[in-house]
Image (cartoon, rainbow, N blue to C red; front, side, top):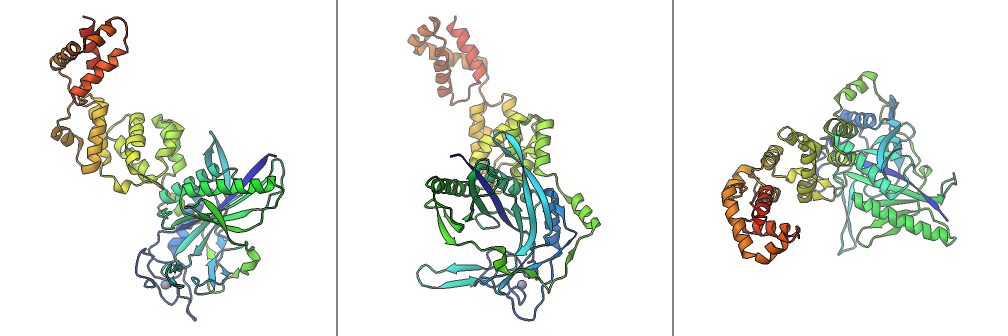
Length: 477
Ligand SMILES: [Zn+2]
């Protein structure tokens, strides 16, 4: 039996505002427990929340960047549930009138682009954190995070595979980073994702029973968890068993899902409009102002890289995966105009060194774009060869020095002196008469052996084109 996978994602992006959503407390990460708090975010009686204007601005920007329709009048609602990290006994969120609806994002999957619908984007406050003591039967509550602003971005169930889910997530991640509204750190939970997944017989319109996956703190984990769950559900259905609707936790170490609780429905939360907050009214002028402040978005930048710089769609997609990486590329391009060669170098040499679980960490890169451009200019001009360029680059990554200094200090300038190289070439031929005979008898593959010998003797500094010419000349008499 052939099944179709249906996936929808709910992403929570923690906003980079300086203060919380409904009070003036700082949102700074890593402070001592319960110090970033005040009567408002502690949920003490008699206090009133005041909306942080910046949160609405960030939300409008994201709504515009994801092609959403903004609800000019939207409002906050109380989502009631009890949990020890939620001091008020309810979370202020948005329900029937969210900030934005009906958007979409375009993703590249399986060589074609697909449009994934965005159901809604709403503003809400984060809860606190529970810290469970592993040695004693005790838990601690830290309310520093309580009231940190979040945007929840809910997709339509338009995704058809775990790979598409990961592609959508990467795209959204690139956008929030590009807008500079969220730091995107998945390990610290500033960009987190829950997924709904169900299977249905291909051709059936009705959706199958879904499960919800939580606790996936990297792109890789999201894809792995969904792949696992897709397999688990398919096996159940093939055995004639039913999928039970539930919330599952992904255990990244054991690579299995575990049941956390059976799933709540919206009515369990008894939503109602929050009487402490006025409806949010957004003027046309405010939206226009936010529109004008948007940076060039990843999709537009990718198109420009392809159309104006001649990069392939795939290469451009890698470069725009983070705004910092794309900025780095463009800054280096100012000093070295061959976009393709530059992109290749960045995607291989640079990214190999800097690749982390969530993409490229350019904050750790000691090589400035200008220095990378100078290194590639030296390579292009033949002052150094490709092998040496890699050695120089590795040294630049260690010390942060400029390429000229590294080349000079390590004596790595390419040997292009014909007389000097010819002498070594003759020595090598004299020392390897058998190989020379084979070459003259037509075994032209021996050329690689001779050039290899030369590179060994010159520590890779010989100009390879010249080396080839000299061997041809000397061997052929
Ligand atoms: Zn506070």
